Length: 282
Image 1 (cartoon, rainbow, N blue to C red):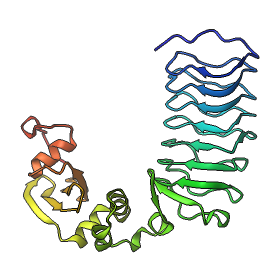
Image 2: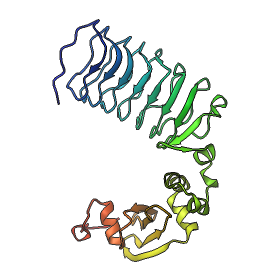
Image 3: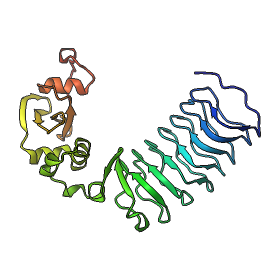
Image 4: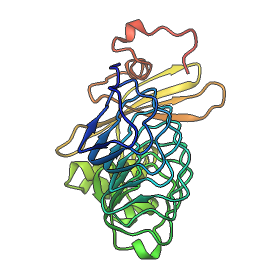
């Protein structure tokens, strides 16, 4: 971790790159005309009130719990901030993009947000709705959020699933996707999204997969399935049962996998199944 350079209160900067440094907080009154980069500052706990910057990157700052009151930015990245759980009561993030990937503690979005061009909420599992007055002109990425529909004002906005352009049916009505639709999808990235939204279990039920191997463990019978996909690597999944609950789990494994034991060993982090010797397999 690099030592952060000394910074004066009320200082003005064109750009400021403090990524990966040991800085714990910024001095009051600091202004950055363009980019303020604090990515990966593992000790950063606090940002000053009234902070102004063209863009602010505080991604992967695990101790940062919130953005400051009076913040004014066009582009903000708070991705992978594991303790981020609150928004300021008043601030301005507008014109550009908010990227908030994997902020598991964020319960929602503030009413003052926007208008924005892009909104990336991948992995924000607690966010299940968007503010009624929110304006987004380009796209919203809703992968692995709890969002089930868009406000009326956003009905025409583009949707993405981890960067892949999708429509509202794929995003919010995955029960309508069929295995035939997945197999006939010519775009490999979109095919993967449709398969994920459909769910591997339902896809395998409908797709008539080849069974590569079967065996047993304390949970019962295990099966290794394979489905060929056009212009893409095949889908290979192992079905295992929990010996405690009896619940079945379906786990995707590398396409070259040929046995159930090899598949389960891989899910436990072993490339060589001979190295995998649990007292009880689950």
